[in-house]
Length: 473
Image (tube, rainbow, N blue to C red):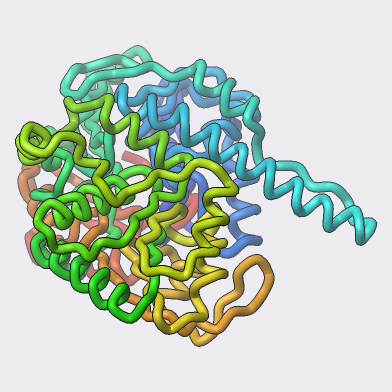
């Protein structure tokens, strides 16, 4: 790990460095002020996740402000822990991100409390010490009081000498890229952060808006070296999977993030239903968070693209149709698994690490008539990644189950830009001004692929930082 001397403006990569999760980048100014870009939960091997999430690598109370790109837990999920450890500054986020975080952070805390409750029951039986949750619902409520809602394209000053502009990143509702204009000792430096960039021409959300030129860029690299199928192909494949699975009497189980992916899949199913391309089987969205998040989506039409607005005029609510049922109640969720009829079940979480999806997988993964359809990125060592890799057996709730269900992987539903999308976005920035690009939020092989592509495009300095590495700007 390389660490440079202090006394200059520098950035330290405390998360999403040579990995996809736990976005967290500390920007320290010459005057001693500290800004944190994102504060995300790390997801991966249990022991590694526990260690990284428990220790920030810096004093939480020393952070003056947080600039939040979007509400996904791997970008916002450690904010209650930051507050618990002494942070009392401001958190700047778009209005939609604020609304989503008010749901998601509380939900994350509730899940952790319930998980610890279950673990402590087992520990009592074994006379083992109690464990504590990473944070509680009280911590989640506490940190929400520090949010400041901001609008796209409207400059704001989180601290003296720094002006920030958010632009729509097209990733999930309320997602933002940002450029920080930092003025110190008569010198102005512009630092860009892509957050997570979306795909152009995707349903529901607008295409990513271009950021201004900058001197340094921190860029995601999730799908470096890959190319997504166009939306028309994804839609056709979804129709084929549902028809094929229902034809053999099976269920389609779709692990999907409660925010973004669930709404997009529902919207495409709504289109297929109106086009009479779906068999007459029930579709369930089994996730209280997804139900609540869908309400937030409908409350923020300012984030919708023109295609969705036109569709709503003709068909009404795009996130609900005749065969669709949203499930909140636990008993109704259990009842779904008792049914032996063909159906589609969309449930969180997308990486199959927590939530009701685990129960649906446990009850259905052994049946060859069923299909598990993965519609987004699954990080290494998660249950979702093991299903993507089609391991013959997987462990769920500590028990081993044979994986007999068909597995269909459709990364074209990802909310991340592929390599052509990333190159197009970065390619609009002034090459002569851009001194260095830092690649984050990607597996090492994906980062190396994007680095090679950027060097081919004549970007002279593309760097992949290590976890905890500090670099002077």
